[in-house]
Image (tube, rainbow, N blue to C red; front, side, top):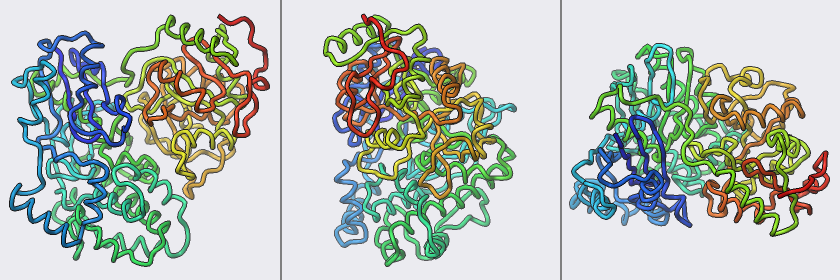
Length: 588
């Protein structure tokens, strides 16, 4: 039984379920020079999955499209133009034209969405369409374990199939929708508008807005927060729903209203108040939903819950036992969710196996790593070694101050690195943290770089880790305990980004973490995603080859091989020759 899930909107992707197991996921952005501009049908990702898995088109049993309707894709320029025209005569004229001609927002017809299947040789009559929110909820429910088999799944995003939020209860794999909130009260659209007003790019920079807001202070912050808090309220008749208040227009067309409402307010106060409003409002919503549905184990998904820096505040509810985040809370996860829902609807929920540890794709073979190391040695100016214990050697170099790229094992589902496609460094060295942040987003000075921890370490390292689900990998923001060796953060809340990994899922990365802890004590192991110059995750040895020297890394760990520069690099870090506690001998 082979089921394909397809998300053909923004950040398109393809997911493959073989006999109920999520086997592979492909992102169209990995094949583009402009990953933030990609939308539409994921043709190249689909071709790659079929070729890699050696599947014939006629061997696909079901093709599940995420979303009953698909808005006409917009480029980044068109999106910004829409925000710029909001509240103007031209914008109003366009909206009237859409209502008169298209009866609402223009959408791509199902025939147009299915037409690329014929080019790929797939049969359109085997396709089905899955509700946008059901797809998101299915992936979130599959990624969370619950002792009693009941999980409360909350979706909160911009808009999808005329909804901005929904509440689902998963019982033994069956999803029941118990509440929906219409798109005109979308918190996602509200945050996108604030992002635009502060000079950032909507649908991309919302996480940066939240991190910036965490640094805001001053007495004016409370006044701006009050102005935002009066714009939304919980429905007294429907306790799981919220709605707009007063003269607040629909959130997809509120640029001029918010510009007037927040006039003469400082940008940092606006960012900070937006963050505080979301924290308080969403925490109340989560707690209300947990109380009314009697579900203590909660899974969050949707673009709003993709703002992971909100996590410490969201986890404070009295009626929540565990609070997990979907492996892919953004629209990109809809392909996997649609495939899961299609299997459940066509073959029964008993055929959907637990998501388990989200490691997908092929590993680099030892022979490929040997060829890579040999080519780097021939290029010169490096030491090449194959130590008996590559994890201990990696930890030793990192403890000495090196910033290394590591490519080993498979790629995680969320494209976050999780040690296997990561930059590794000492988190207590400002120059190393600064260098890693520059490689992630050189235009953002306040960016916090994540650290890697094992789920077994959480309680001893962090104050607010009691509600993080155990045995599952994920990304969270948590508050370190005092005297744990964690560096100071720019956030006023003191929370830091953390990549939680599980030893059973990835023993090699766990060995690096343990060896580093043994050497350095409680010093955090920096574990940032290793991105190429195009801004996508390093996935292959070819990506690593074109990236690590140009990015100024001290070295790269490729499978069992360690390659380290002989000469130093700029940025104030120690020279590689001074890092090694024992010299490299031999080579290839």
